[in-house]
Length: 414
Image (tube, rainbow, N blue to C red; front, top):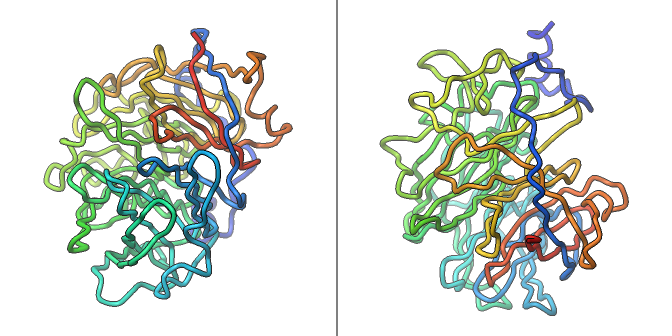
């Protein structure tokens, strides 16, 4: 029966069920604990369009508000100016799918902005990477000049093939050397183990890819990343880290991190997703999974050749779960990294730095601006909230709720 389900999922006939399969006892992550952590939410603003918003991005003194349906705005703390719409994207871009404006990332000065589009076609004369996974379009990276209120001088840089109906990933950040780090997803579906693509060093799917913005050349600097939608750069003890969460299938939602200095095309650090040719095993978090994503064994950690998650959690019952985040702020005292569940809106955290692997995940309660207990789901009228975490330009913590488009300042309650 499982082999039939796998074939149907592979050809796109079988959609993901509303509930996840029940996993074997003892082969799921430890449930989150409760340490009495709380955060306060104070509403700050709202994105002008609300079709498919994702995590805002600070650029200099501005906050960039991203609606992946094709709109980009600059917010100065009071009002917004429109930077991009579906009608003003570069002429080389033919928008594809529901997320044609995949993500944006500014350089350290905020004067250059890098925009990743999903397009039916790729610009001529840019380096390209091909995909083995039924591609129907391209990730296309553009560079813009940015003065805070307008974009200018669009320049295409690189293109990578994409399957627009699969897990897109989309996490992006500009590294300290000016290169762009991008996380293309595995372009896969539910009922899968990641296939071989995530472990194949010749394929860009399910990887962290570093893009040289001057030449457009790309190199894979980490493998086994299923679908990281946000890459956040933070400094801990004078070391620069890239942090991200990696949504799982049925088993484990991961909080991951790696020192920037450890990203390497030669050593290829490995976060585990996909079938590894060395032993024929597929991994999700600290568990081995079968061909349709069910847990079949616990990994003894640390496992040689693989990076252990900073923390992980799963489905305590069978409701869908999808991790979102992570978020760090110097204003936090007990919270190391904050993250949440897109479906329920429940918030979680780990207390230690990203160098500590295998940390316990703890629950985080929410209070409103008057100090009254609430939940993200209550704020959105009982609907799925889809929290998207970010930092404001001053470094303080924030969260945007996709359901309403409202965004909030987040502070830890002592």
